[in-house]
Length: 437
Image 1 (cartoon, rainbow, N blue to C red):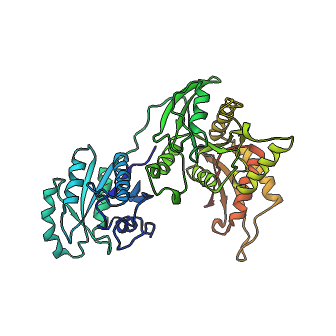
Image 2: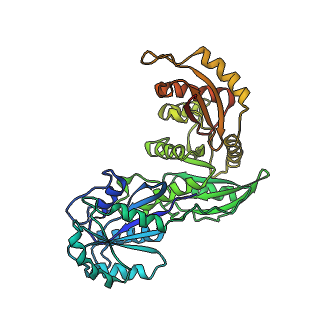
Image 3: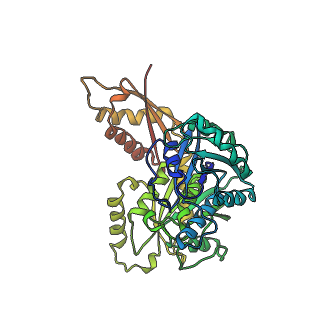
């Protein structure tokens, strides 16, 4: 299920990015003494004592400002607040609550969001006596921390996890296959979904970024119910400096988290580009099934070799997608639109497939004898047997005498041989190596 979102907000230069980096234990956000450095929203997956959540860093809020950039940053932070399960309002304890802090607090009190008031830059215990004045913000007792030296960050994380759901909220069980339609901005995702639905149920526009929220729509076709998740497009972060499109990356990732199979749409005339590859990598990282849909195929001039040439270019650019089924469609003419659902059904079936242990060992035993792992550090490496332990994604555990010495290249060999004999088209495969006791 989608992970909860914790947004850090506050006026400029109170230490939001420093706190962001401190919690993540790495320097991911740009930190500078100049106010307003963080303009685009920054997010990353954080983990504390087995509880994971998306942590979101935002630009400084100046609610009453007339400055154009500050108004855009305000719009960014407003949406972050709207998406968040929990908001951290950060205050610079060294200067106390300013009018801007009061304005932000009043804005938060009008929402139903859980809020933790955090007094930052409290580097010493004796400085805590001064933070009681922050009670006038009306958001409860402030928690004193120092993002710079890490003081009380663990206590803050404990408090954050207290607000998060103790267990993932399960969606109502159904028999549908959940399909996330993902891709860059303006590749025709809404048009594609509309073609499947046979009606203009979603807004379609040639203007990038029309779809600002994920919309779930069910369709029954080919004897199967599909839940289609139409998502906002992903755009390079360097181009997300103005407007509201900045937040679509996280929205898309959460949609992929919820799906069984992702349909990655690329634009036929443009071809596969780095941002498409990034989305594909994220889909695989989330261990979801995938089908690559080349949309607007009707706009490409073709001959007898065009399709094979195009497919070859895709595999050369992204060899890790060699197992992903590719289909060439047109949302405008509805060419092969419904055929994508056949591929979705097949990939979903493969994700759930389980191979009998005896069949697996018979086939893989032959492959391993043909190409045994190379010796390492003077040790002879032996693989004893393999079993499939999980589905969605298919997970295979090999038992070995020296698992730590197996090279990644050999793990890739094992994965490829499993695909060669058993299929798993469109599925990520996990290979685990355990020491035989």
